[in-house]
Length: 287
Image (cartoon, rainbow, N blue to C red):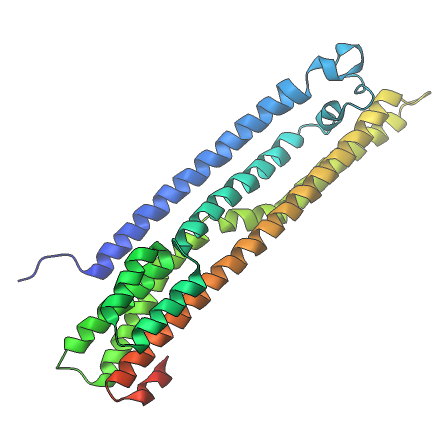
């Protein structure tokens, strides 16, 4: 009796372990980003040298933008945290997607695989996958290995073999895509809430400004200026962070779509070649 674990179960365990590691990484990044943001806000932006009389409660020195940002109030560290998270996860996604592409251009790799398949050189196509590496090459290699397995299979019809190859490619793709899409949900969430957080800071700033105006007698000019500064700074930081997150999310989504299209193109070529080599071209309609 065979007691070895099934490939699907092993892959599922590996994916769950990878997902847990990615979640831990995300939590650590967010916590570190907040700590760094608070330190920068309190001890860099809030340093007395940026304010008149050396007192952070006073107006910033003319032209001192660090002091101006400090006047954004308690919401600023949260907005800075979101900004650092967008930068960090964008760099992480850029490295991951670049690694997923492999050592050469995707178009060149897919073209090479198709040429090898047209020449019925499966071993050459496998060698190209080994040289390419990355997520696309992993999926194509899984399909080619299944191709070789089905070519030696004698107990299945051609339609069953084609479906088996197609299923192998789909399962391999399903295992690779989550790795490419990790942390994108954080970027998309920041894109949605950064503006709202900035507006929350704007509301706090306007409350302070109107509170200064509501005082009896002469309004407190310093409190009024600080309230307006808080409102404007939070608005600017919130909109800027949200815009950056939207651009990053759309950029990485488009790159993942390109990889997915390349996988689909290579997978179709594998199935089409197998069906053609075994005299069952109609089986390609199942793709």
